Length: 231
Image 1 (cartoon, rainbow, N blue to C red):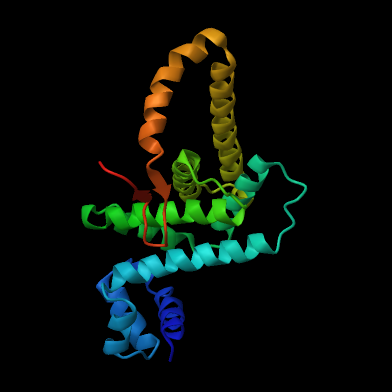
Image 2 (image 1 turned 60 degrees about the vertical axis):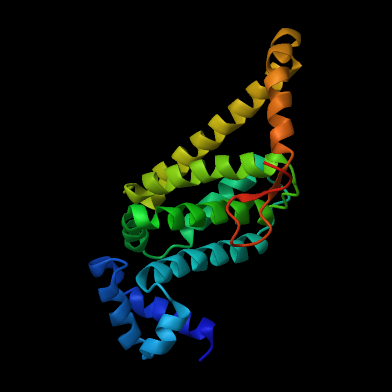
């Protein structure tokens, strides 16, 4: 079996246990037995056991989202609508809400909070990359930071949403995207205003000089990016 085969078999087997035992060692061992994967191979694919299994589940959802978006014609949508569709697609590819709920519980633990934040950032990064974002300056960071907040809030709302077809969640998502767009419009108006523009220009210049040394992440393990030049 390849590493991919092992991960897919383990994840499929784990889906029967996570709703009851969470992303725990109990689930990991049960998935290992059900998938008929030896302990050595299982630990090679998931060195930290259950937490890596949970991260693999999240990564599988990201891949399913990208595959769906790549097959969708987005040409007739405004950019904000494309982002909304991407977030909605990411949630719709999830087959079992309880597996996400259990993941939230796991990544709320202090020792795994960093892993959860990194997974959230990668989802936001994948959305922007799939939508064709080419920014290489500070916008690379602000877009992903903003979308991470929107996505995280939407997931929490979605977990408690019992409306038919999750209609309340999609309305909540629309409102969050609208809030972001209002902020962007306000920032643009502020810059265009002669008086306010002068007030913010100084701090912006200083901040831009600092941020211009920051570069987008160079790989899947970079979060959120890297620093170039002296500190």
